[in-house]
Image (cartoon, rainbow, N blue to C red):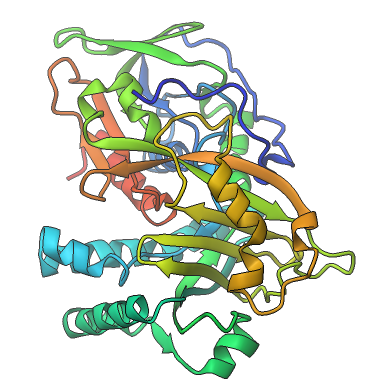
Length: 416
């Protein structure tokens, strides 16, 4: 049981410019509505946007235990990059080659799809299409990654051709700014953005135009769902809402209201920090802003980093030292200690006093699923006939959530 989201979340850089509607509470809905969405992050936003695009006038209530975009989307590292070759062997073994290709293509499709809607909606969220660099510090790990990429090339050349292998030492040092410990790198199309600004930038106008009803700071405590009622009753700390459809879009907190999913989804606390730019507006880590980095010290041990155009760097720690908890009011000692000093070993030319530039430190809760793929669709459990799920993105929601949400929205509307 992940519990409820903490009301004392850590201070996040992405929240440093709060949206005017971040804590909005509409008039309480008295009539039966078409859809209640629990969770106001990327999934909730994408569900709202798709439902309104496909069926203008649909009555939607968006509920969140905290403010808008206060969960994983608003607490991540700001990067958007697929795990295609890194997950290739695992997916091939678990699902077969054909399905592994489909999953990989689905992830790749997010970059173009998200960029298109951000431009269509004219959202200023610092979207930058860039190159994602997977840098390796162990020769054996790098060799395995290259072998996986070559195997993928045999089965999905249209995906493999998006990658480029780098072994030239001068390129690693002088262009990518990696330390002499790096043995090689693989690049792939990627993106970075200010996720909070995207989500709130879409939801804000919908609120202002009266197209959605939003209830922030409204934890859902239970759901009564009887077969013959024609609707479910969503019980919250502030009252009840009746809805013909209820969508669970809470990702790592899915198990709170859906105990049936607890054996299959693990909440894990990720740790992130922001480095402020130097006095002359440059990166304190000595990096360029035309690429993002995943620094792989081991197959399952890595840091992820984006270098923003304004000189600020956002870096997060994966795996080592993380805890399987649903509490983002604290950070973890080992990952945070590492993030304060990693640059001097992993990068070529960080500022000597880089650690003094740390401006924000925070945590966010990731959802790891048992088979590394999301839960999406109508819930098949007894007493859940009016309920849907969309979440459990295995720590890579930025390349899973948007198109998954689009699909679930279509299913709710009766599409095949």
